[in-house]
Length: 110
Image 1 (cartoon, helix red, strand yellow):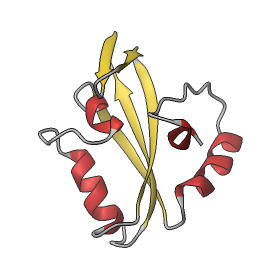
Image 2: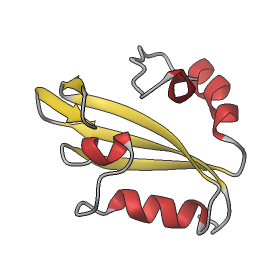
Image 3: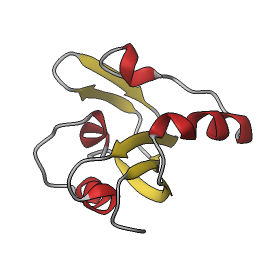
Image 4: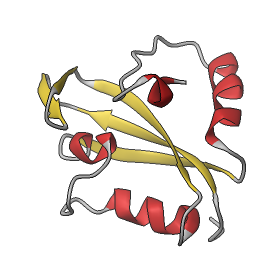
């Protein structure tokens, strides 16, 4: 993984079956299985710094993924050195799955 700006997808695995509070107001009904989280890292430190943060379990919760990490393990990390919206068309065309979009606003879901 190169230490430069880009986007990434985390493949998460959950073995729990329980609701998880995401932020202050939203709840996600987590069931056993795989989840994906797509993010971008165009600030200082690039992808390496962002992914290292996601790998830590003890940290201040800032992004939605931080709340899921208490209940999910990261199985794989996919990296692209382009903006995250370029990952979605390829990702959705090459995988057969159902997606539940979850975010704080429409910007998070596109």
